[in-house]
Length: 398
Image (cartoon, rainbow, N blue to C red; front, side, top):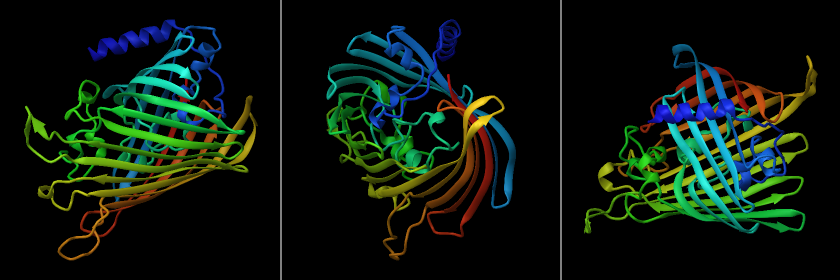
């Protein structure tokens, strides 16, 4: 069935007109899923429906403690977007993702927005909970780095899609903007701890069943409030909380209610030519005592991206090509705790630095070169494992 769906979408892609235009820098993070080139023509009334997407590929060469799997190449993502103005105040948008070639095929977004007022819009469908900055704003062509931030994938389980509904809005505050979002969704499931990672891992709490039903009948709640300051950028505060385990079977209690909660701070600032993007997140998880201390009850992570243009000029007929000097600093602690027996620190953490260059032909298309080096300590704090490698890749909307 997945293969037939893929062929159908590709058929539509071949026969449908594709529109492309520069991204609008005035968009807030709340509007990230609509800040895509293929949407602009539809919004101007040229078409009631539009199709677009993005493609991303890269090379990898890494060594860990002197051992390497060698050089490899991958088509990491090929995503297709569908957008339609169903009514003057009703919008539809969806995203179908093909990851690692066709190894994984997933429906990432499929929702309807009903605009009651710009400050009060009702949304329902498969949506992206607003946890931090990255989860809603994850399209590869928007980022100068090949790999996604660890805090955004391992603490915040991006990309996280859930079936749900709620409200969002944008309110002017003088020449600035305030945005808010509030949703209830089916929520993460028991894979948070019942997984093959042998640690608390929120990403394993995602399941295809989340789109069809809630495993415990208690919806999760997510929200974000952000301030977009004219001429500076955006700062956001967000949270997510829900019961992840199945605590009743046919009306009989089988476990306590186990809650997972996330809290995140994010920012996207422009200081003169220097751009700063980052987020910090904390996760709090109720873990059964039987799982032991290797399963962390608290996790924390952060990343900071520094992007500075060092050259902007016409090159070989290409207009206004920008060469950026980039660097990412990141840290994740999967188990913020101490051993009960010794009161010594539990480790299970990663530090990383990712310097590199990006060559932007437009806001839609870029080439990227990254050097990645990270240091990882296991649960017991054994000597640090060192990984280093280089990556070269491309990403483009279409």
